[in-house]
Length: 303
Image 1 (cartoon, rainbow, N blue to C red):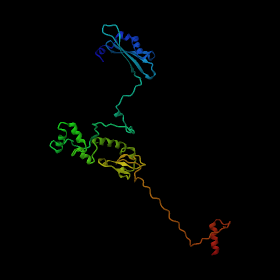
Image 2 (cartoon, helix red, strand yellow):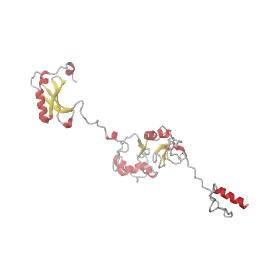
Image 3 (spheres, rainbow, N blue to C red):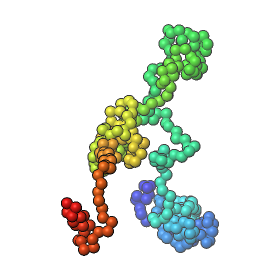
Image 4 (cartoon, helix red, strand yellow):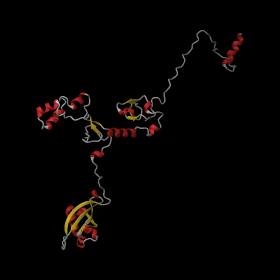
């Protein structure tokens, strides 16, 4: 806000009355059909005001044409400053732009997508320590001076980076299996551990209701390094964390020892007595109450 605007909030009379002039400028920029009624005036400075006109464009609902006019000191002629389409208080506008690196979420990457990593990413650190430049009095330094000269820094660095250069740090690291240029820093390791602990840790509802923790589960696959003290990988295909990194104090109902199913009991084999003859009447006495009574009477008669 200018000093003139601070001293006076009264619009310049000639500029404020130039509604027709301002409307003509808006019509010239957008066409007669796109400019609607006059909405008001704003004070932008000394002898500078902005006229607002509604827009009739259906795609710009809530927007308005802003025509800024001004005049020189001691002049009665109003001149055009600018004409622009601006959003109003209720206009539909695009969301605030966010850099792509901040818009990415887990699961957004697809086949063929590349995710660049910043050179100074705090989550990463060099895969090995030490500089590739040899000591000034070493045999390798003398060899490089003979090949490229003491001032050829770029050529010397390229030669040192080659895996065939004798005694270079990169060559030794490759032989030891430390070929990764960068590895997780302590910060990157802690950030990953915090994410995994949040999703599959002791404070999740699943772990709170579990009969036991993953540290005693037979489906837990150990991991190497410092993470082995806190995390493992679940290998229970029916569990909620199959293939996920889980905290050792996480748990679920699929624990290997939570509910061990007992082995089914095998029925005893049938006993067949082939040495005893049992009599069974083919036509029981209809007057008897049951077959058992008929058999009992028959046995008494024989006795």
